[in-house]
Length: 448
Ligand code: HEM
Image 1 (cartoon, rainbow, N blue to C red):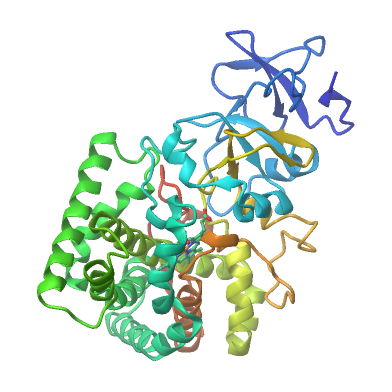
Image 2 (cartoon, rainbow, N blue to C red; image 1 turned 90 degrees about the horizontal axis):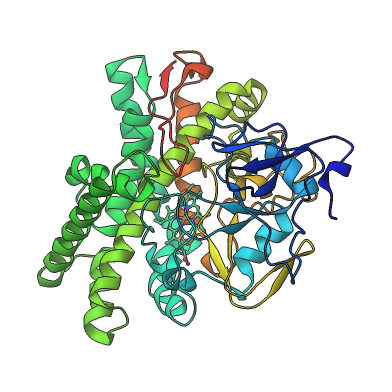
């Protein structure tokens, strides 16, 4: 028997549920509903034994995310159970993958597919599968869509946008200064800055922000919204983008929507529906993801005063600091989007069979000591930093160069203009949104 109780640390317990199903469970995690401790005479399922089929799954997530903590359970899993059979709240049972090398394989190896999610009951945390557009495709569709975006998202293009980002930053800081402390760095800075940048790039009117920010919540909600709210907000966003596309067709501008409309009309490189979905995904990622990373990074600096002071004293550290903050901030509340195996693949000695789902845990991979010395330390001068915060492989974040420019300019501007920037309430009292896929601060009250 493959007995995890041999573990000298005693870091797993055996659980049994009402159906008599048994499963190993990290001892430090609270018991999942409907499960109780069993005794050692119960046999554990063989893990990954081809004859026995996959072991019984344990319910996932283990618990709600807590602020910017990386659940210590992941360190235990990386050591002892790196590929764990889990049952997510929705969709197929899956393998939870926590080691750096395995997560990289899941993201980068063509034996794992995103497109197959559409042919399955996608393993997920959201009531309905999120339409991730390009991120839901495999080659050749992926190659076709990515090529259409490539020119707008090169590192060179991001650098050309830097002066504009710097000007937006300065304007927002001027307005905060005029109003006086305290300010809310989420509402007064991070959200408007990222909205201004993405609106300008795509050609979405900034004035429409009050409406589209509400619709965008549909894509990140796990439990915050009802299915009806998710459906109606998703449809509202698509109708809105559809309207913008029609407008650009009759009145083209020099923005990305106009360029994509051209591609649709002239070469049929993209269908009308693909166009609407792609613009929506760019708006989601460009707006709230980047804003959340910016606000969370400031909060991390508040709780790491040496790093804060070092960065203020030497802005030359900014590019490396932004990379380290992307590694260190666990932006996903739990997992990234799932993949399905096209063929049998072995990960850390566990056989994933063709057709089975895997869910990679990016925050766990980014804290794997096999790749990052002192992984739980924020080290702004970390030399080699091959983090997976922007993903890996063909789906690696296309907006990464732009996001880095926004983060460098946003953080750099704040530190230069507000040398005394500090939290206006104790950091441990800052409130995060609940029931969402990404860790987002509701407010970040600051003074200076
Ligand atoms: C700090 C900010 C950001 C972070 C941490 C981030 C993170 C990520 C990650 C982890 C992935 C890969 C997901 C996976 O493989 O499952 C991804 C993909 C993607 N991101 Fe970002 N992102 C950020 C900003 C942006 C921005 C600013 C844009 C564009 C405006 C963007 C657009 C995209 C797109 C389109 C994809 C899918 C690419 C593909 O499928 O080829 N992201 N992002």
